[in-house]
Image (cartoon, rainbow, N blue to C red; front, side, top):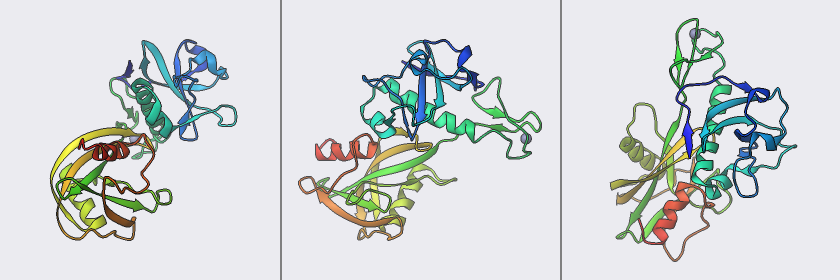
Length: 267
Ligand SMILES: [Zn+2]
């Protein structure tokens, strides 16, 4: 079982850590895993004693740390493959390590007074000893929506410029400051494909640590308007039935899981 740490900790040199500790050794948006897709123990990595490790929680009762390693010295598994194929514990540890380490690396100094930040003694936060500012870890929520019509027999999929050639997926977008999830869903869909939806309901969520998102997946029904890609973010969108789907995103994302649920008539 993976358990998160409740208070922000300091980096610790390898020489002071238990060799049985588990380590999320990060490189190239992936991590080092053994042949059975488990996180290695510190003793297996052969890291220099001065390497700094960030405590991120506990895995099966052992301390769990995050660090970056040289991609030329280690074989890593791509983050997406970890999300698709690793156990729930390893997936959670990987997502947390990836996000916590990036957050710590980008919160070294106070944004208000520029003094060095220190870990809070009573919160999962960094604080400024000079002006008292407190910085909590940041997650960027994004909504992802499976829009159907014709009694749930057609689904709307779109091609985003950032996708691989020919890949179509669900409509997605970040929640803006000041919005609730419902407002974000209506705005994103209106902006990107110009249609109205209703009857939406929550389906599932997924931590998406590239770099710090939380994906919230919803089901919605088409309620009016002609679907037309905005041309900016999306280049194409079409309605698809189960028997004539385009190329889909790789497994491992909540988007793919939701499309698979549509295909299997489980939405
Ligand atoms: Zn400050």
